Structures are given as structure tokens and as C-alpha cells.
Amino acid sequence: DLDHPDARLIAAAPDLLEALEDCVAEIEYVSNPNHPEVVRAKAAIAKAKGKS
Image (tube, rainbow, N blue to C red; front, side):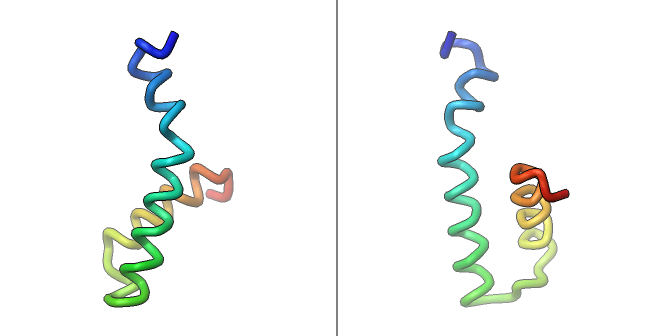
């Protein structure tokens, strides 16, 4: 049932992960790769991929 909030989040998860990976890559390219929010985003990506 895609009307449930969890189902919508699960359905969107691959797109959200890809978007976050793209954002991190761009920020690392143009700015500070050690910014706390970049580090946090990288941790979330690792967790989503089962690497945490």
C-alpha cells in the first residue's frame, strides 16, 4: 500500500540515495570534503549501503 508513509519512503529511497551521492560528489569537488554535513551525508550513504 503506497499510501502508507513508510512505503512511500521505501519507494523513494533509491532516488534519494542517488541524489545524496551526487550532492556529496559535487560538494567534495567544489568545496570542503570534510565539512560536518558532508561527513554526515557520507555516513548515511554508508549505512544505506550496509557499510556502516
